[in-house]
Length: 534
Image (tube, rainbow, N blue to C red; front, top):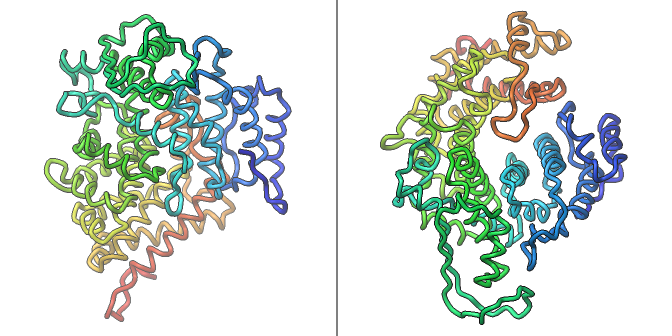
């Protein structure tokens, strides 16, 4: 869907230069100018990038929309040119980067192309498409629902995984090495699909035998050992069982998951796909019936998400980060927030978030590589949503989050400004909901630390962007280069944030510090000066 740019909005020269460089290259070579793209601008406006996104739409219209293998139309085998994998991955990476750093991203509307790419048999393309949808939906005010019923049905199919916990195929058993016994492995590699056959006269597929009406059962074991490609096997099953067009994506999803179960690496890749699909489904689904059906089939899913967080060494950090994002997405639905709150504060999970936060903050502030900045950010995002209600705020305060978060106030690494700002916002919520929390904040030296941090940030601005503390400057240099592949497909090393974005996060942090100081110095009924408030 082509977009129109605001007439009065002038595109910054640096952005215009990049867009012109991309649009001047022939469409078939579009990935070349995109490969080195990193965000080097201040917080942006989506309208600045409309011409680039329209160019991407032209590419999708020419190379993606007509593909029969993505539409899973009749006779979809061997009729399409080779799939432009690298170009698609680069386009999706650039789209994510722009959406992640721009306001007004709700004007983005090319869901039909992302939806079509979910039928790709390349798991990297499927994951990148879901990641792009998740990027569009996160950090938005209110809830956007993507009104596309076919997309919702695809997300539901991808979110289902291999089976339930009772069958030994739950989230934890699938994610950890040697988590499944021999029987569960055989079951995971088996394709089982049931549907009711109906006559579809518009179909062009030639069936040698007369059509069989009624319940059809497709049951194939050892899918991971089949020599046919996914599309070849799908075409064979569609032809033999006359699977209606509306069910072919679901069949393809079951086929892809069954084939992936055979090895831990491919299984972990599809767990990421499953979690991404679940996150997008929760945030974008306008139909609550799909979610009810999902939780009826897997009532212990929330507990499994929480349990996976404690598998520090056995489970990929990327999977654990996606679990945090999934829990945060669930919390944004107020009807399910209490379930998440109960899961993280009761039983064997009591204190799990504060323990993880302690370890993550220690790792980030000491510049060790055990816990990434991405994990700390995802953890802070979840706690931010939990403290948005009085009950959640009370539960997190009782878990000891105030003393856990205070060390971040002394972390002056410019690449961690967004983490400090999130921590300050959480401390604000504690003080806003509870006078005892404000008193504890002061008693632990939080008010003095907040004032000291504000002095540092003001001094930084007054010094024209030079770090007032030489030690913190050298510390910033030492960790300036980070790997951004922990949550995405990028495998190049680059700073988390460019200098203009650091300035943007510094402004946000200063606003948060001022509000925290005002809340920290407020003591009802007490007219005496609070020590340290000067």
